[in-house]
Length: 127
Image 1 (cartoon, rainbow, N blue to C red):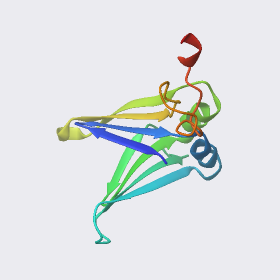
Image 2: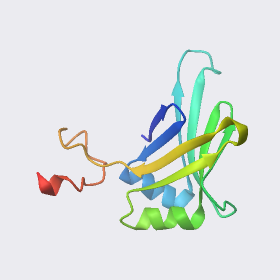
Image 3: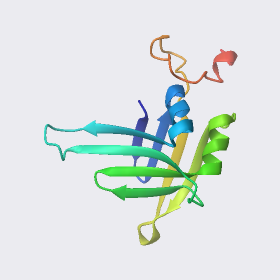
């Protein structure tokens, strides 16, 4: 499950290995969080790749928020050692939004089941 963190004017997505594999094929990952029984009480967050995008962008069409990655940037992140993609998105008169899309590394203090689909933590070799 893609992890979403929103704090102030920052948004972070953390992606597990199997999700990144799926993203490599489909160019899209989607997750929905429901807040009540009402169908409208939900937030869907999406990570998508776009050949048309020149830079990291945000699309918000309630209840969906999408982080859009340029295809070349997404591909180099997927296949390389790069931990994440970091960008500042200009919101015009509303300021900026800091965006992070990261590979989800294994927690150093969790059991194997919790870390099953995570990327190996580079700090694990140091401990």
